[in-house]
Image (cartoon, rainbow, N blue to C red; front, top):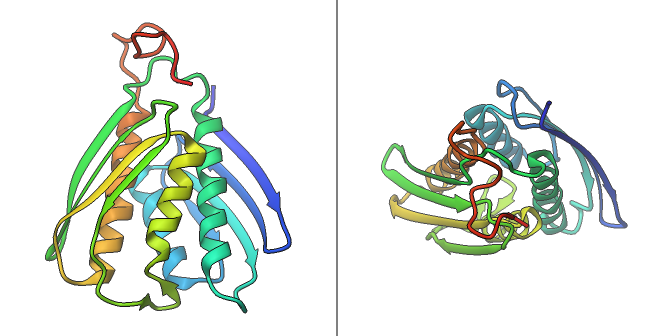
Length: 196
């Protein structure tokens, strides 16, 4: 059975159409109106081997906040929906990923209990049109709508582009690991018998 989700979310601030295949090959068709954000989401899809189609029309005349936060909400919902009952998956994923001088750690648990912790220092206000304070808002929204425990920590780095891109790639690799199957797992990997 394919692990896919298709979602549409329309508000006065954003109109979002998203399709996600967790068992893809890294194909991405992304248009958010924010070039650097498109690049980050493309990296997420490519390095996690997820197929992602995303079209967004947001109120960018205001700023990038609604667009980026709402994409986090919808992508998190899609991950949760596509993961289904989580039977047989390893549940936990972790990756330490280098990108030039930057070194990022991402660790996550598809526990059904949302929590987000971030230890990242970005020295500029923007990367292209991407407002760097939205890094936190995106991953916070995603972690809560996906109901995952997510930690992102910067171990080294000074270039904000490298730090953010390294984090998106580390997240992709950690999520891919957490969603992988282990034939030794009977049902869900939980003492209580549920990951909800």
